[in-house]
Amino acid sequence: MKNSVIKNPEFKNIFISASIIFIGINFIYILSMYFTWTGLNRKIIMKNLCYIGKAVSKNPELESDIMESILNDADDRYIELGKSIASKYGYKPNIKLNIAPIIYDYYKMNIAYNIIFFIAIIAALYIILYKNFKVLYDKLSYLCISTEKIVDGNFKVKLFKEKEGELSKLNFEFNRMSKCLQLTLEELREEKKLLKNMISDISHQLKTPLTSLKMFNELLLDGADEQTDVRREFLGKSLVQIDRMEWLIHTLLKMARLETGVIELNKEESDLCEAIKEEIMSLNMKIKMKNIQVITNGLDKPLYLKFDKKWMGEAIRNVINNAVVYTPNYGTITISAEKKEGIIRIIIEDTGIGISKEDLPHIFSRFYQGKNSKTMSQNGSGVGLSLTKLIIEKHNGVIEVNSFLGEGSTFKFILPME
Image (tube, rainbow, N blue to C red; front, side, top):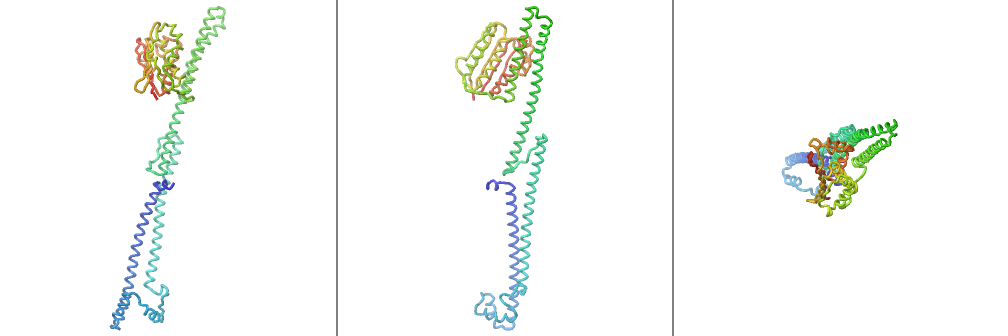
């Protein structure tokens, strides 16, 4: 506590200023005392000279005795005699100061100097304290004004910089608090904007399947259910739309939970190659239905990495599923994994329809559907790749894509080995 007080700039300014002024006033006081006592000494000497001149003029033979008495210490033999003689004229050792004009004048002068000295010290200390506390008051006033501005939403205000001391810490913490509040407010605005966009997107995506379900239901109510084949067709189409809505809602909920930080990834060290093979197996039925050949490279050796098995599996499955959907029958999908220079790469390459140059920059945007995706699959929603990108970024990784229309696509997951 003591060291922090000493380091405080305001305390240092007061201490240094007071010390300088106190030393200066003391120097002036000592100088004035020197001239005062020098003057007193001169007055006494002049008085003695007067006494010597008068005594010697009347008794020349006593010149040496008189000078010896004045220049040397008092001789006790003559002190008593002197007292008896001087007492006849009222001059005694305990005489009052006002009876001895020379001493009394300099006594009054000394008192005046002391009064001036103490007044000067008090005035100097008052000026020092006023000046330094005014600076402190101005800083605190600015702090209050800055706080009011931040409350009003103005985060551009920054406090003055201090080299050291408690105000320096206060300024640093205030600026840090301002930045944290600004970031928090911006995050809240982004979350509000995200929620607004998500609600708009969900309502837009659910509108089509709901309209279809409503139409199928109306047709059945109007008598279409009398024909078994027609009823079965309508119910089949309704099931497809219901499945689509169910998948869409689940996927959007997953994205919302990840984006808003409701859930934390449970990262554990696991074999990434094993996770990839599990996702391939989960899509095995779709792959066989289209007679697609799946080639794997580097999955025979384990690659250990800290990742959330559930969410990473979701990301890998989304990309492989897209490759299956957009690859024609008897096509090829190549899935590779490799470790190099502290990173792991997962490469998923297909011989599908590819992505156009115009669509490529937007494929990770939520609900974006390129022209070719619409022609190849009526069940696409444009959220799968957006969710995949979010999951990879939550693992501190990046996702890259290379594709040319009609030549297939290559997706790369680049994950750091923590």
